[in-house]
Amino acid sequence: MEELITSLINSYGYLAIFALIAIENIFPPIPSEIILTLGGFLVIQSSLGFSQVVFWATLGSTIGAFILYYIGYILQPARFKKMLCSPQAQKLGFKYQEIEKAQRWFDHNGKITVFLCRLVPVIRSLISIPAGMNKMPMLTFLSYTIAGSLLWNLILVYIGTLLGENWAMISRYIDRYALIILVIGIIAAAVFFLRKNKSSKKR
Image 1 (tube, helix red, strand yellow):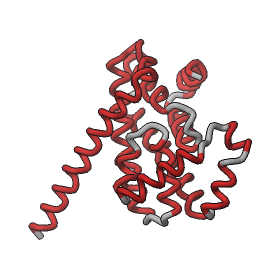
Image 2: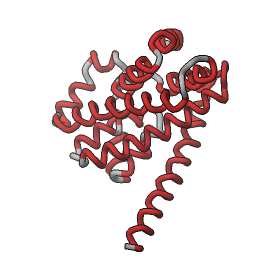
Image 3: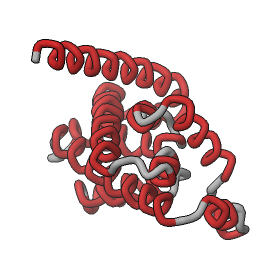
Image 4: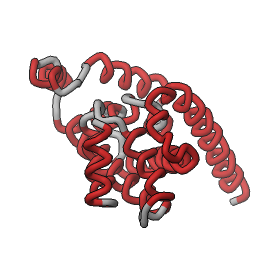
């Protein structure tokens, strides 16, 4: 998998990053952490630019998330469960239990879950489905998705620049990094809402 991703990015640059991240959001088994840290490594080894890698990765994340949101929006839960429990879906790595976990996160924490879950492996993609099922307003969904994806992409691409040739190490420590990124995300969300509330009070 790593060799294929490396080959594609080396050959097609930003287009490959965009496409791979979009596909990763639809098919979670493709690891975004590998794509992004490799992109960060190539920033210091090739002509790829840091901001461009983050931009195309964020655009890919948003497109992939929108597709899952739309699937959740138009499909009845029972039919969707039947589809994901099929042998074909199982071969692609889909697990309905993960969808249920994302649904519980959404039910418990509300709309902000879309932002926070963008910082958690696997769940970061699947949270778009319960958002669609719950008919979350599109503008709100896209705002949280872009914000969470941007933060995730920024941090992982930056980690890739720090790790250099050891960028592949991220796959071994992603759970640890994900917890740190999630904490950063919670702090960022808290700061955002505090500032928003202060602005509203001033008005």
